[in-house]
Amino acid sequence: MSQTLKMSFEIWPNMPWGRLEICGPAWNSWGDKELDWCIRRIAKYGYEGFDVIYPKIMELRPHEYADAVVKVKRAMEETGLGFSSIGCHTTFVSPRYFDRENGIAKFKKAIDSAADMGAETVVTLVGDGYYDPPLYNLMTRKEAWKQVVEATRDVADYAGGKGVDVSIELIQGTLINSVDAMLKLLELVDRPNVYCCVDVGTFYTTVKPRMPIREAILKLGDRIKVTHVKDEVGFPNIMQSQHVWFGGGYADFKEMADALKEVGYQNFNSVEWEAWQAGGLYGVGEPSGIGLADFDRVAEEALEYLEEFGWGKAR
Image (cartoon, rainbow, N blue to C red):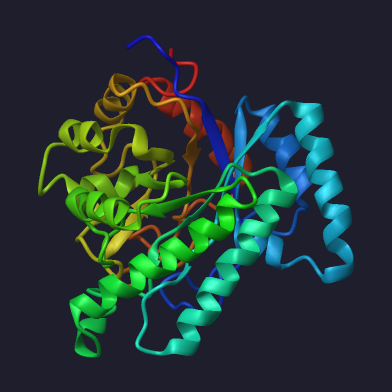
């Protein structure tokens, strides 16, 4: 297990999820910077790749988009950084057909951007919940599973034609909230370009109560495409699961690093810092309510911390 785990860093816009109360009108120090500026900044701190939350791309006005694509590709060429993923959380499950159709269309636009800019995969959780928010009040589990499978096949076929992969994030509150549910989804969808996104924080709040972490990673094996590296506390639902500074939560980063190395994982591991968003009792951020929004500090100090536990150019 001497291999290295290559690290990327996630680029966020300000107020990434719009009116979503658990995130709030959040601000970070890179939120108003252009993508190519962020890429060069990430390279400065020693990362090998970057990820982009899709609303950062959506902020581009139509007349700005082509120029931004050129700038991103130039920054990638000059820095040698790889474009790991686009994060596009969207709606695959809903009793409201128009929300679901809009969600699928949005995801396909993110796939277009991935193809234009050279991203390897587009990531989504299976929104809009099922357990949290409790859509089971409005639709059966059978109906929800049918929607998930059909939507995932649809976007996977679209992405396949553009040379892009689709990664489904195992996350609390959704139908895909366990390793067994993820394996079931992969089997039912039956597309070679559909993978699992492993969120380290979620695995310790939501997966570990059901099975040991090593066993979970061994089961998923080569179906893991990207990992989100963060620390977390709280319960296995969205509302009361909060992100905390590295070392302050439940995650055992050495255990996870060892498990990923054991299965020969070669893809990117993205530092996904979310605690700059709304926190407190009902937010996704720092439980105290104040999270670090200085992304220069985040980029530098997160990597320093993780290297101590076997990530990146491990110390």
